[in-house]
Image (cartoon, rainbow, N blue to C red; front, side, top):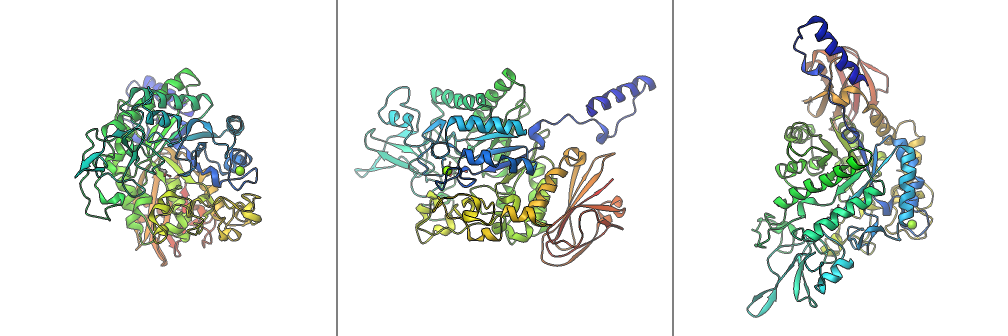
Length: 580
Ligand code: NOJ
Ligand code: MG
């Protein structure tokens, strides 16, 4: 509305005064943003979120019972990791039926109820789309093994290489989870490709029937009301058809994924093309229904130039972005403010014009922020991702700083950890970040009434849980909630952005928009006391600034005034400040 009024006033001004003065760039009314461009996406790991039936695994009814928590956080949408029929070899990323719900999680009816309830609350639901592989228990795979058409070429099959009379895989490719990416199938008399677990055969996107079938999967869930998809490991989708050996990377041991340089199995041209085709399917659906754009968020851990290409080019409009994992990949316990600035700037400078940046702090494949970067840095990092331009993505539990749990070798579920073996599993396991969500300090952290949960509840739950943080005067949860609310401000949506390192370890992010309240995020990323002169960055910062959000335990609380540009920061202390 305000946009239309501004346009009218500008036009009127031009008519009255005949000549138009050139307009300052910042005064040009910005195009209205679509819902997803300013969204916070909240990732739910369904098996660990909330158990409604006491079987020790989270489920859809459990999620529905906690939608009020999600709504309360102020986030835009919940993205659900896979809920589909699955033997659960890889946490549900091994799918035996792409268009049904696993009994572990409930039924399609439960899903419809969840969607309906979310809609009432004004929350959107995004699903995980796993196009690279299915489960070996999928009907398609069973029929492909038997060469029953049209399934014969739904998977990547290849003949054995015979070396000195013995059967060998077609090439040297390795699985992400260690060992050869090829598995011999006696019945078919060929090898099949599995870039992940043996039970996850790779689908073949050179088969037009398969391509169509997977598009129908998208349509199936959109017809049930989903707002978009997170696309699992898009980088692995296609492979070079000639199946050449990959060159050695010079790192790791021969069985490891990192032993090879993945020039024939990652980020192939086919991947970029398929994303464009899926975007069209989503656009068609929006055009035929409520005209609300559906979103695609793609997952890849590739080098930046290859990742950026998943944004598409200027001819591909529509709601689509590749996850920005560069904070996850580039920032650790030993990083400093300059490292953080570099990661932010390098990414930001690569985002193509007109595209929406995004900031991801964690997911179910990465150790929790508390462990990866440090408990004391949780609030500062949430301030950063919530006040940078674009989309923010939060992994469940990070809104109150849940830490990794401890999972013994006997309790281990993650196939990547199992393949690493008992000696090395701790270096490979993703189970610690998947332990049940810590709701309160009752039995099983309020997650389940079961005697045994699918992964153990972390012993830290008495100290770190949502209920406690809701009751506390200051908590990570409250900081998070305040930040999500603050994101509605004009300058945080449309303002320009600059980053600065001051003192020895302070990162400053300035967001400015003409005629709007400005915002400054100040993060002390280190363990020493810092005193910074903000006016060095911008004279205006010497005027009175108001503290909008303070990290837990900070000396200055919400509403305090910082004057003369002199900001004191205790170790790890962080603030978001504003100026009218
Ligand atoms: C990426 C997912 O995030 C991960 O959990 C899974 O193991 C692989 N893709 C295979 O689907
Ligand atoms: Mg359950």
